[in-house]
Image (cartoon, rainbow, N blue to C red; front, side):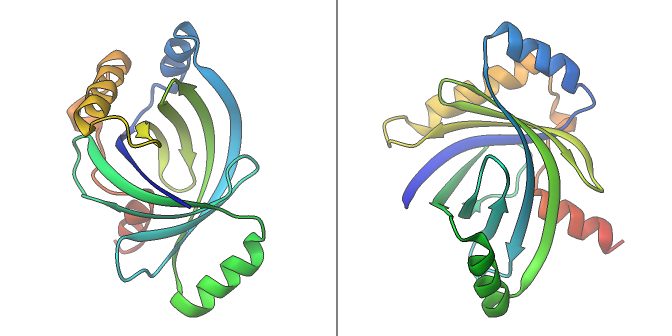
Length: 175
């Protein structure tokens, strides 16, 4: 278990094909397509989710401001093996808040991770995460990296999302 930080953005995007082309031109490493089920639990502090996928499987706790601009996220990641038992324990002890079902294309350029997401009941999105796993980069450096790709992909301020997919889905269901 390791505490890390990143600067991230999440944005609506109907332009995933163009973003794929840019990532290809930049020689991004394509890790694959992951079908992910994110189960959010009723955590008293921050957000707690169990990610179950064919590529990524983690228990993730994070704190992040809800703002549309690039934002810092402080997180702790625990790689899971026995997901079913862990999910059962967390569901029984904390209760499930919401479940997100998505198909995620995962790309990397150095320490920057890109997600091209198709989220059930919400639509298509792009995420950019400039991450510091070793504690060697200043938040300002991560912000500059994130802003560079925002501009490169032509993502406008009006496309940026303040909240997590869990918040968006809960708001949609409560309308």
